[in-house]
Amino acid sequence: MKSKKNKLFVKFKVKCFSKDKPYFNVYIFRDQESMYRFFLKENKKYCKDPETDFLAICQTYRTYKINPDGSEKMKDCIGNVLFYKDFIGGGVVSHEFVHAALHWYGACKAPHKKGWIIIKNMEPDEEDICHAQSNMVVGFWLKYYELEEEIKSL
Image (tube, rainbow, N blue to C red; front, side, top):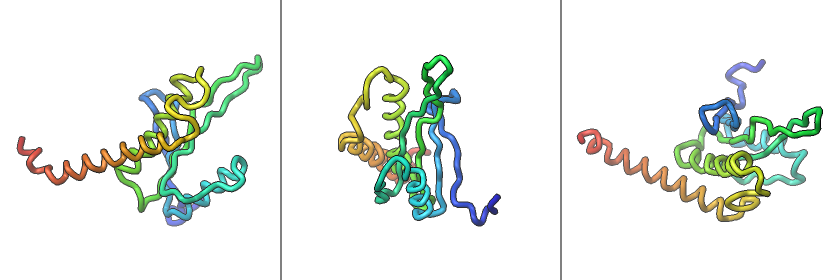
């Protein structure tokens, strides 16, 4: 077991609802390089040349257990969300969890439909939605802290 000094990441689960499932694994890495190494290792079997030009990422997936009768049951973990400790805040967390929520909806809420519900294969529309969400969250907190004393005096 590595000592805390050599630890590359902290991992925990974030549930879509208060129930145990479905959930995303969240990793917060020591630095961007460690996050990229993890990403490349995890994706080498799925992608020939994965890109590492992101500051955080939501990796979504669906895995299934095949029962003896041939039926399938989707496993509880539906993705990983990767951050590194020097680039984490309300906006980036909000952005990545919009990706996560859209995947949850497509995988769990409406699994009878093929592909994404809102968009397919992360077209620019999804990225625009995520950027708008993160910008609104950042804008809200910046204004909130600017007006915090006035709000507290209400």
